[in-house]
Amino acid sequence: MIDNSNDTALTFDAAQREVLRLVAGAIIPPAPERNMPGADDPAILDDIVASVGRDADDMHRALGLLGAAGQGDALRETAPGSVLAQFREAHPALAGVLSLAIAQCYYRDTRVMVAIGMEPRAPFPKGYPLNQGDWSLLDPVRARGPIYRAAKEEGTPT
Image (cartoon, rainbow, N blue to C red):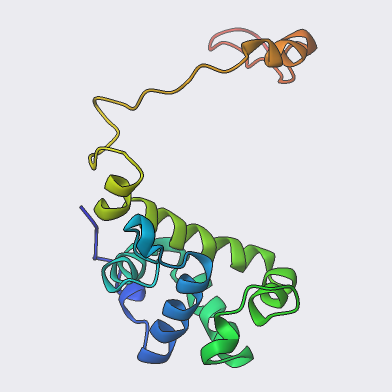
C-alpha cells in the first residue's frame, strides 16, 4: 500500500512529470521482446511520484536542474557527454536519489516482477530463496575483531 499523505510528493507539475518520464525511460527503457514495460510507463511514474516521501525536495531539485539543462530527446540520451551523464557527474547525490526512486518503483511493479520470474507479493512472511555465498569471504572481518567500544552496563561505575 502506498502512503499518499505526503503533500510535497504530489506537487510535481506537468513539466517536472515530463522530465521524470523522459529520464525514467532513458534509465530503464521498455523491452517489448521480453514483455517488460519501461520505467516511463504511466503506472510506474504515478508510483514514483507517490512514493518519493522524504526525498521530495531532492527530486524537485533534480527534475528542475534536468529540465533546465535539456528537453525532449536531449533527456533520452545516456551516452557520455549527454545531459544525463553530465548531471550524474555534477550532482551524484541527486542522481542517486532519482535513480533509486525510479529503480525501486520499477522493480516492484507487478508486470515487471512476473516478467523476471518473481511471484508478485511482499517478501515477508514467506521470504525469497537466496543462493548461499562463500561465507569464508568474511574471515578477514572476523579476524579483525570488534571495532567498537563496548557500552557500559547500567549500574556499573564509570
